[in-house]
Image 1 (cartoon, rainbow, N blue to C red):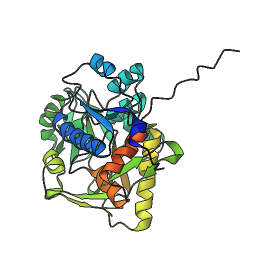
Image 2 (spheres, rainbow, N blue to C red; image 1 turned 90 degrees about the vertical axis):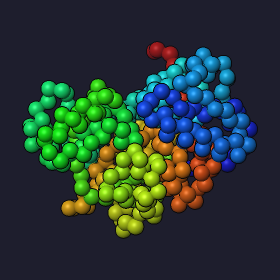
Image 3 (cartoon, one colour; image 1 turned 60 degrees about the horizontal axis):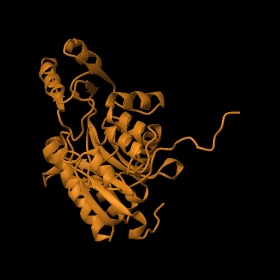
Image 4 (cartoon, one colour; image 1 turned 135 degrees about the horizontal axis):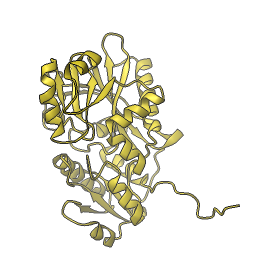
Length: 324
């Protein structure tokens, strides 16, 4: 899948990072790393923060392609992808529809379930939800989280039904759509994915061991006590099974370019469950895709170039088509 490309073949490249989402801080770190990597490769790369500059300025820059290092809403949810389609600027990562679907955890789960892919049971919450009934249906503990946020923002592990109102209120501060999800006790894994369709590949799994099994915002991006095992240490057959499941989840949503699938393996029976797909994963010093790429033999700089090489616009009908 990897192809050598001369730095000049990419043309003028914009690195989009920062943005207006709740994940701005992480995006600034990701984008800074990507920008430095591309410049180090001799690529004509330029920073662009959509929170500080308009789309008119983006168009005026006449970028030949852009690397999206934005996380969360307004960058990972299909809205920016749609604008780039209108401007005719190829971009990294999945297209408009796949980005929008993957950003919506409930819709993602519905598609996976329709394809027979395992994901924890869930239901949508409102302020009028019957909390005792929710706890009875999904069991305790359970997870409450915003449907359109990442980086575990607004997430609560609920161990008693009377904690649900507060957990809902916390998530609802970030998103009007909130879900409750069955808690899967076991091993936490993540799988980086590169490419498109039949050519897509799954990189080595990473096993995540967080302090007190709490892989929250602090432990994701700033703690040095979270352990990341890559290779994962799983038996080869189990590793292959989970990587195949991650690929299936990626293809089911129509993803391309790159993404990262998060998986839990239930301790009681070793059954894997898909949690979510991240279509613009972190590229910070603590990030997981670069870690898996390194084990697969690809440096951070080469990974950035490979992602950039795959920048594209969504497929559109041929302009040669004419009605019969």
